[in-house]
Image 1 (cartoon, rainbow, N blue to C red):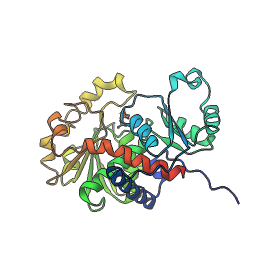
Image 2 (tube, rainbow, N blue to C red):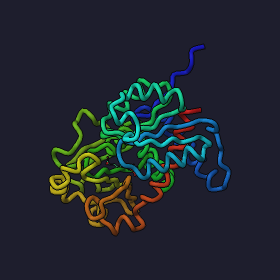
Image 3 (cartoon, protein in one colour):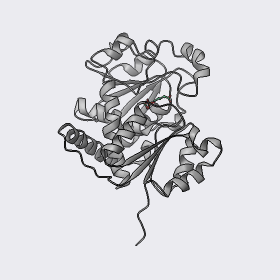
Image 4 (cartoon, rainbow, N blue to C red):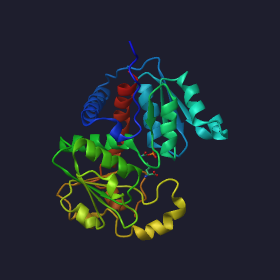
Length: 300
Ligand code: CP
Ligand code: NVA
């Protein structure tokens, strides 16, 4: 019998719409189990390597705690302390780690690095953020919307800001799940038309995207690695702040998502972030539940 091919999660589009829905169902079940003290240690005896080549609070802690709660041993590595940081190749790192651990999670800059890791590893690889994609974030975002609204379908989604890694993963989720998403970015900071499926629209005016939206999503104007451009970006994105004035055009009760960390007073108004429309703390918590479901899905 040929062994079943391993699955990786490098981008949202690595899962089908049905698989995404099943994963969210499973995450909800695990969240309820945790609340009632009935954790399943389904990955007892397994280990997961978590490699960080960029800073992280939520992703790092939610994966480490998530693996622990499933009974797996998380090995958290900063690439600076590894031979990887001294020039050992990503492929040789993948081959070596595959002999010890049962999955590898990597946060890095170039998406080609996580692809190279996955190609050389014989265990599942998970993208914990690259410059191009942040698929784990979107699992938590979808879970948060579904919890609040009961369903993902029939809602209008607006992305306000940079067409960055988180936005690209949202575009893929919209494509996989058939969600109506409008992206508003300044000229020069949007997606190329060929990147967008038919149910994702791109506009320049943030009010056009926010009008009639049920879910308004934003993220920083300068992502990790773009700090040198922050000043130029602040100028380009002036007028793209998610605030009460922008939300006045959205549907009543519209929810605001932000993956965090936020730059209060830049892409999001501080009072809004602390107010009842922002669900960012639930969103952050849901990283834990969604990733536990993902680890089970890929490792069992
Ligand atoms: N949202 C998110 O990925 O946060 P961290 O950078 O803290 O992991
Ligand atoms: N777009 C942000 C997301 C951080 C979680 C970044 O890449 O820095």
